[in-house]
Length: 346
Image 1 (cartoon, one colour):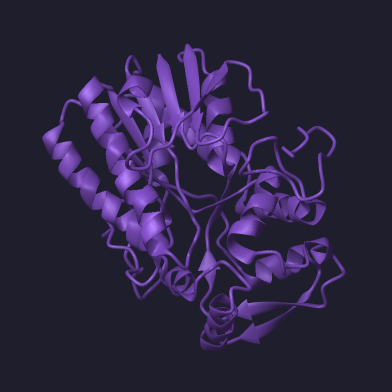
Image 2: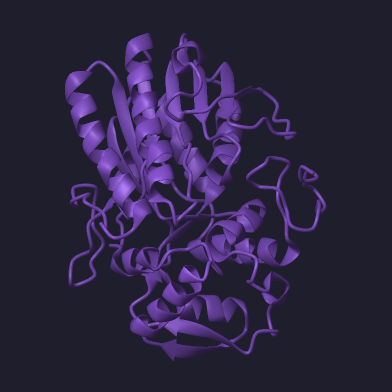
């Protein structure tokens, strides 16, 4: 089986290509990114390509592939939603259409918990039948939800293609920490202070609860979705549910209650002054995310996370204070290589 992975040099991509390359059912993995990485993964061949409209010839790239895993995504610039729409929505549609033209048999698309409509008032976990209309005020959730509608039509038009939609919670691993700091917090976060005992308190935003998953565990679910004859959406999360208190315990700090309105006002002011890249609409969306039930993935993919959500978050925090990364343009570390890791690109 030949598999092409777009967005292969980011947080999810680097884990997905490794997982696929280890599977005996996969004979060839092509990792696609806008910029070629220095990272070398046995069994993975790298190709430089751009999914944006007017970009690379995707037909030539996908021709002969049995499956395409579409992970390519642009989080910034949050002040220019037209640019992210161009890559994330129009680029994704180009990927879908190219798969149909060249006869790719399986398309595995990276959707998200962010595609879901706000959760039920009682807070119960929802399965994959929950509506996917996102939160319209945030570009990320708006784009993820729109692509769900695109795939609805794509499946009707191309029933011969096996379409899988992966809807994970927050994905963390050690080597993604520097990238995620740049994407969401910007340069002002004092990452070197994120260590147990140094921070006296952590804000506990009222109503904030989220589910996390180690990126390598998510990648194993993607691998299973490629090699198994499954279709449709899959929720991907690990236990337990996290909140501000969970972060505080890992940092040996106390919590300070913070009303959601105050947190949003502070974020909005910092975003308008371009001090942080995360837009206030994203916080609004996160506060409304449903909790997910991953029972379908456990049953049909025979998938079980190897790590808890707490372990995934702890590994991320360790990577954050160490400034770690990988030798790919998106994951370049803040302070150079750490033991066992590739040196980040210059």
